[in-house]
Length: 143
Image (cartoon, rainbow, N blue to C red; front, top):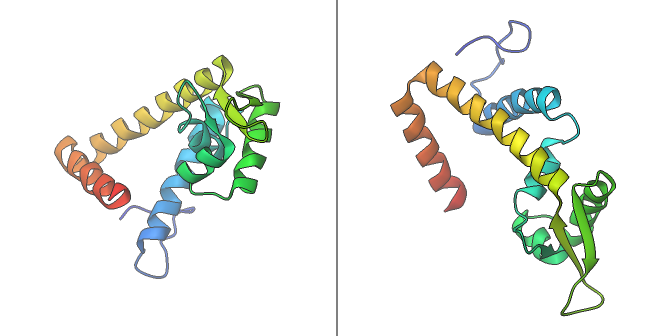
């Protein structure tokens, strides 16, 4: 394992959450440079929005958040001009969230960062090993 955190290695054998945290730290740093207006947590919300949009409750289920927590993200994203929020056709109490062109642009730029990270990691460990890693990770994560 290569050195991390200023040349230091963890005191324990790294467990999966620790390794994932290190990867997310790397991704957040890259996104901060190439898509600075978008945090990784906001990207997670934006990526679930289909063109027709979702209600906040539907979106909350997709991103595995509470409706209230998801609503806070939606308000942040609306303030950044990345989503628009309208009254849902089926229920005047519900709000439909749709991604805007600014949101789509931010997702596209973030996708370039993520693709570049994928390419770097595949170069580091070999394309076939990385492909298998991605397949196994997707199987575990998505069931």
